[in-house]
Structure formats: structure tokens, C-alpha cells
Amino acid sequence: MSDELIPPIILFGNTRSGTSMVQNLLATHPDVVSWYEPRTLWLCADPGREHDEFEEIDATEKVKRHIRKRFLKYQRRHGNRIVMEKTPANILKIPYVRAILPEATFLFIVRNPFSFISSVELKWQRTLSGKGIRRRLKSTPITQLPYYAGRFIRQYFDKRVLGRKYQAIWGPRYKGIEEDLQTHDLMTVIARQWSVGSKKAARDLACFDEGQVLRLRYEDFVQDPVADLKRVCAHCALEMLPEMVEAAHEQVYSDRRFKWRRFDPRDLARLLPEIQEEMQRHGYEVPPEIAQANGTPRQNAQP
Picture 1 (spheres, one colour):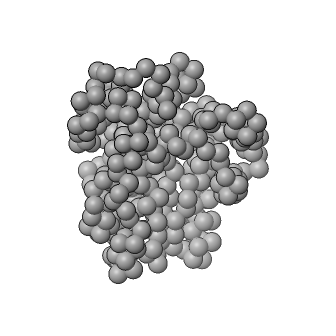
Picture 2 (cartoon, helix red, strand yellow):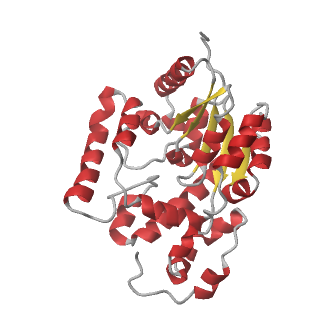
């Protein structure tokens, strides 16, 4: 067994932005093993923190040793393959992750905010499954369990007992999200989950050397997954194998880009002040029906 950590592949990207898609495809390579969202592991620096924003200063030597040890353990357990990890909340932790794993190969993916909003709004309605809880507990030290037990209980009580439509909180927790949930409607909060993550990632990724991070857009990937997968393989110094091409054709669907149309365009148009600047950064245009609806919001529009 190797005594050294093979440089892992770290995929940054907001939730519901194609991170699972990219991870699953790259993990079809025999030299790669995926590690699906060890979220509580990354929180070990401060498990009681009320938001997910961690900086380089949070990566103490103790934290570095602990997380690197867990990566090495996972690597050894899976035949010393390259560990590919993605945790969407880490879009708010990029300097922290980089300080812990500076030798890693980094990827970043972004998705159109309207698709993000549509997908995430549905996630806010769901409770964490038993499978999801078990997966999360596997990466949680016993000493940290009290920090998360309350969240699980709160979620269960809100959904199962009180019958509320939405969870109390879901997805990356930017600074101030709890206050925003008290003063703004949920659609605005979800839009901020996208825009805050985009702004912070842009600022943090600007500190990397040129070419150190491969950037992807969900919409481009699903249109030509083989071409983008070749780019990913080249960036990660992996050979593009026939089974990866086959998996790309079988697993990637391009018909999920317009599910935001389940909303009235006026409900989305009122969110433009939250997201438009970051849309421009990533080269996204406002769809015509939303642009036409801008300035004519519905009353009581929350779905």
C-alpha cells in the first residue's frame, strides 16, 4: 500500500450544477475512484459554524493532517486509485480546500442560474433520505455527531410532523442565509445561493495560477460530453478510454436545460437583480421570455 497521498482530483461547483455527472463519468476510468460529498469531513475545522464559508486561515495544521489522513485512508481502501472528490458546499471553501490539498488537480463547473433555481427549489422540498444520512455519518467523526443530530431532527420535524413544504435550510449556507430566510422569500434566497457562490468562487479562483483550474459549463458539457470529457482527462493527465465515451453517450442528457419553464417567467424576472451580474460573468444571456416579463412581477409569486 502507498504511504503517500496521490494528488486527488477536486471538483468545485454549486449544488445541482452537474458535479455528480462529471464525477460519475470520470470515475469510469479504472485509475479513479469517486468520493461522494464527505461534507461533514470538510466541516471539521468548525462543525458548529452556522455557514459554509471557510478560508485559508481555517486550515490549521491539525485540520490539514486530519483531512489528508482521511483522503489517504480512502485511497488505500480503494486500491490506491486517484480519489476524485466533490462537495458542492465547498464552492464557499475554495481557499480552505486549496490550503489542505495544494497538489490536487482542480476542476470547476457552473450552471445557468434559472436551471439551478428550478432544481434547487425542488430539493428544498425533500427530506434527507436514510441512504443520505448513512452516507454522511460515514464521514463524520463520533465527536462531531452532536452538531449534526439537531439538523436532522429539525428537518424531520419540519417536514414529517409540521408538514411544511420546505426544509428549514438546504444547500450551501452563505453568510447571512439564516437572516435572509426570515426577511426574503425562498426564491430570492435560492438565487443568492447561486450568485454568492459564483462571486466567491470567482474571487477565490483568481488566486490560482493560469491553467491550474479547468472551467466547465454544464450547458456546454451536455451538448458535447465527449469533447468536454476529453478536456477533463487531458487536464487530469488521464487517458480517454472507450468505456468513458460509451458512458458519456449513455449517461448525459441535454433535455434538462429548460426545466425552469415550469415557473411563470415573471417569477424569475424579479430575481434578475440577484443574478444578472454573475450571469454576464459566465456568458449567460437572459432568456427572451424572462426578459420580456421583466418589470411585471406577479403578486404572491412564491411557488
